[in-house]
Each structure stands twice: as C-alpha cells, then as structure tokens.
Length: 503
View 1 (cartoon, rainbow, N blue to C red):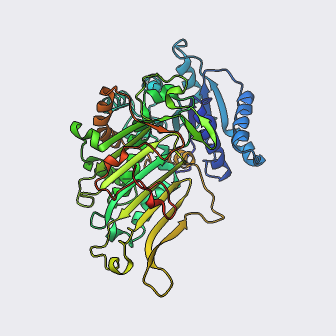
View 2 (cartoon, rainbow, N blue to C red; view 1 turned 90 degrees about the horizontal axis):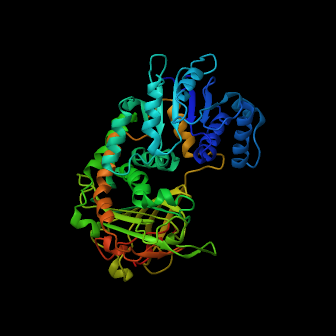
C-alpha cells in the first residue's frame, strides 16, 4: 500500500480520554507536518448525538487544551475539513446502529474505501465490536483494505489473550490486526535498534563475555488516580512489564534482523521472548518481587497510600511495584541476568536501560590506586532524558596515578529537531500499512508465558505485601533478586548513580 493512499480513519469511542489527549492532537500534528494523505477523512463515532459543527467545536477544544500556544489557522482549516461525526446510538438497544455506519461509509464521494477502525474502547468490548463490524460487511476487503487497531491490554493472561485472538481471527487476518503498544512508537525506544545495528563499535561487546547485567526500569511519580478499577484487576506486572518492558528487553537482546521489514523485526523479537527461561513455581519468590505504595510526600505534598485510594479494597494485594530477574537462554546472553522494575509513586519519573559491564579480567590498577576500578556502563535514557551515556575510567590530572569516572553524554536531539509523540508515529504507520512497531500475536503469547507463572503465584498468595513510602526510591527487599552482593539497582543516569547501595 502506498503510504499516501487516501483512507478513512474511524475512531470508535472518539469522546474518550485517549482520543482527546492523544489521537486528535496527534493527527493534528501530522496535519501540520503535511504527512496525512490528501483525501484522508477522520470519522468520529460515539453514542451521543452531535452535529458536524458541534463536533468540530469539541475537536477545537481538545486541540486548544493540548496546544495552548495557539493553533495554525491554515492547518486547523485543513484538519476540520477532514473531520466528520457519526452518532452511533447505543448498539445493544439499536439493532440498526452498525447498518447505519455501513451506509454512511458507503458514500465513497466523501469516505475513501480504505478504512482503519481504531477501537478506542475497553478491551472487553473488542470482540463484540469486531463481530458487529463484520456482521454488516465492514471488514470485507472487496473494495479496499481494512485495518483494525486494538489497544493494550490484549488479554489478562495467556488463556484470555488466546480467547480474544480466537474471537478476532474469525473476521480479521493477522495482517489486518494492529495491536498497539505506544511504547514502541517512542523515538528513543526505536533508537535502541539504531544504537545496536548502526554502530559496529558495540557489536563485539554486546554479549555475555563483556556484559555483567542489564537493567530495564520505568518509574512514575504518579499514583493510580481515577484508574483504580482498572488497576485493581491489572497491577504493575500486567500493566507495564508484560507489554512495554519486555518489548524493551527484546530490542536490547535481539539479533540483527535480515532486514527492517515488519516480519523480520518481529521474528527476532519473538526469538528473544521464546529464549527467556521459564520461571518455575518454586523460583517465583527468588525471581519476582512486588509491593504497594504507602502514603508519603511527592513534590513536597502529602499523597495517600494505594489502599487509601478511592475504590481500592482494604485487603488489596495488587502490586504498584514489580521487579523481576530473567535470563535469556541463548548463545549471546547465557548467564546474564536482566533486572526489570516498574513502580508508581516513586521519587522520580523516568524510563531507562542500564547496561553494566564486567570488570577487566585483571585489575592492573588496583594495587596502584588502592581500590577496584568501577565498572563501565552504557545507559539509554528513554524518558524524560532522551540520551545515551557511557561511563569510563580515566586518570585524574596530577602527579599520582589515580582514576575517576568520566561520563560521555550525548543527547539525541539537535536544537532544531522536531519531536513527535509515540501515537503520531504509530498512527502514521497504520495509515502506511506498516506493522513493524505493532505486536504480532506470537509476541503477545510469549510475553504472557513469561509472566503467567508469577501472576498465578501472586493471585494465590493473599498475604499482605510489602509497602514502600510514596516518594522513595522503592521498596526494601528487592536485593534478594541480585546474583551477587555488588549488583544493585541504578536509579539515575547521572554520574555516581551507580553508587546507590542495595536496601
């Protein structure tokens, strides 16, 4: 498919938070950049009745909230000319709702026959909506292509993900199914592949001979907010590790693909996920750790603990912090632990990949300097620091032979670079029929296989779980995951961040 083929983007659930905060602003920025197909139409669908003028007023409000510095008038006019609204009614009470949608889209003078359906709805509604679209013939590709975008989570465990896939595959091929993980749309995440495969300097050392361990971390200062109903049934392991962080592990550990097409890239990621050593039931306590945030101080203000959030059960054992130790049992990574952590209400919000290298086989300078040389690090900042850093040992100027750590810092961005949100990149890929940054079903299944034993063990254990103070660096007790006393969490990209002692 030509990336500029005209198409109709149908957003089902268009008044929801995702549409307001991400989709509409993202599409407008693509309009500003001149990247949308010339005759593309954006059809928004929701139950509430709106006239086209009323809906365009709503869209303008969304954009003004996102871009308070002002809107380009010419781009806004072009964007508004693309927008339409379809009052869908309430499908359970309105048997004709999807028939009316089909009739609306049949007007090819307005709506291009290539259609993307973006399901900005609850995952529990995916299969019903796809059934209904198929029931009126809207997924047939006799007059144009049809792609369907579904948000995470794709299931709540391996079995439920397979059941959902079985329901969708009645009507959709794998090529039509776009399972979105917005983390993969981040430019800094894609930079992992560039760093790996565009720099021969790193390839000889990117293996178990040189690397001691890999840390993949994501921390947030935010709590669960108004998502307690979702979070109580999900938790940090499902919400972040099964999807986002395992994808980052796959990108760090994958072999070079045959080329950069979607299938080659995803083939290599699947190989990594398949190579992750299964966590045996008896090993869950030594390879996985969970905790909840208690009340504390964030940005100088008191915040409640997780159990004090509205809608959280007093005896909840839902984890807001999760950490794992995993091994990728293949030739490149044999014996190298991958430490993965994520948590809410922590001291700072950041995502990063920290790679610690082994000590030299013979520490020649230890006798002269009186101490062991600190290890080298390569660190990739994902957010908010978009950077790559490297720590090396150098001689301190002066008459004596003493060493210190020098940090080589490189920010990815030049001053005149334009940065784009992850959803903008992914929306463009959907329109361009490029699945490289979307999850294939076997990726989803193998990621669930990694965490399923831990999910089952934690679900069966109703004992109170450890607490950590909001605003702290994390819970005590995670040290048990490390293989050796000299291994620990690195919490900062800054020089000296490696000096944090384990709890």
